[in-house]
Image: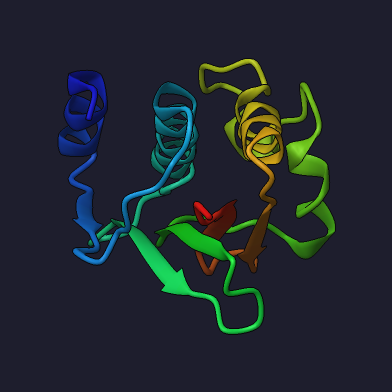
Length: 142
């Protein structure tokens, strides 16, 4: 992980948990690393002022579409209202809660493009005030 991310996690006192069941995948390593980095940076930005902030990186086996890996980045942050779940993946879209934060509003659009280019998809599950979980799928090698 980029040392700058570790510094930001430590600065905000965020616990980072990485699952030990992450699979080996066939992908463009740099681009998929960028997906994880962008999702972690967003989680840090939106962590809010929780007493024990956490970010979890994990993996779920998919029963319905077993030909795909399903990864997630989950946080205990401020959450995202359902009406913004799709909009946040559009270019230059930012939530007003962090207007003073650095960024261009491209991070999630880049995530979606990378995941789509790999044949997967990305989505968020969240409620305002309840944290967010960003899921994305990548095809399993055949």
